[in-house]
Image 1 (cartoon, rainbow, N blue to C red):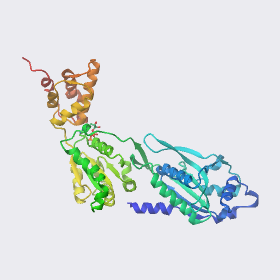
Image 2: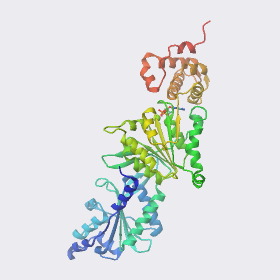
Image 3: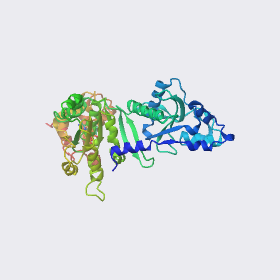
Image 4: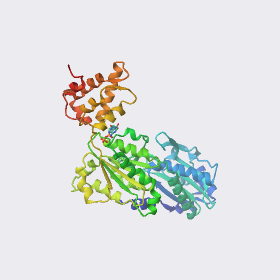
Length: 473
Ligand SMILES: Nc1ncnc2c1ncn2[C@@H]1O[C@H](COP(=O)(O)OP(=O)(O)O)[C@@H](O)[C@H]1O
Ligand SMILES: [Mg+2]
């Protein structure tokens, strides 16, 4: 498995530093007539053979951050500088220096407008990013540099920053400042993103998701339980600095377990909403193979929450191994986060037994395990009223509660949707006993046994109708 540091090291190693003295040899008297080559040498004041090249590759999803950093850099060092591109077939070159080399050799390569694409920087926000463009600017020491940004998705698996300068130190300083600005301006910070991975593109795929704003009233758990999990995730974060000073660790792991449809995912969404400043990374099954990378991202974008839903599915994937390699990768990644990092791991499972052995073998990753049970009578009462939304209930709620023993919260949610639909169909505003009886009878009937199983309903309750009807005299 690749460790986080070795990834960073590799990224650094990939930052090629090459002096293209060979380029000069290719220049001949008769073909050194290229607008591109003339522009580069004109700005730098050197023949191409003396130009220093620094390149750095970024993940495709970092392109927007790279662009924001490049724009901020230009504002600071050469306000008003304009990006330009090249026109025609010469755009096929993957990197600027290759293009310049080509221009020197064969002449031509006309300057034109840069190519733009659109990248997401939030659930509803995009920004223009340069797909192939360059700009004349200055290094922090004032010396001339040409900077290029390219993201040739058709050919390459990365976004590329190229800096052409007269001195190596100047080029490196530009690259470092861009790196710093990129971290500072990272559009992922404070966002909720789903983290996947495409084998085909060999790249992480990040999708922005709107942050839910659920209120405590909308999450129906046994008395005190929501407060306990919120305290663990949000409360500790709120006191982060003081806890650090007091030598206490911040990294935390929370496991929510219970039957399907009881509100584990709902609670996760609530918690993410309660920490609006946090970066939340929701792992998808495809993304799990890159868990170390996702956790590195979480560390960089603190405070952050890493969500691994239905972690029993990962634990189960044992293939030829005794224990699931993905689960161990997860536990390793959790362990790799320093104690003073404000990173919360939120795990959910329907089958805690499938996990227990692995978690017990590697203690210290999960410091709070909370059961999210089937709703008891009081909870079902609250759920019926919650999911009636603002419709008045003119029905015997106690009878509905009694008739729904053993069902899940999501079952009650669906029940209420159907009751409201029935009320709409009968043209009534309030929800009545008749509406509840009609729907409960249908939902508990033979025809809906699969629905019931899917929604986590209790075994059929044939007496529902009788219970909801007024006693016969
Ligand atoms: N405890 C609950 N309180 C309020 N609504 C709930 C609760 N549990 C489930 N729901 C509703 O049912 C939906 C499905 O529940 P979900 O959180 O996905 O269940 P789980 O993750 O435990 O399988 C939720 O989106 C929510 O609307
Ligand atoms: Mg769930």
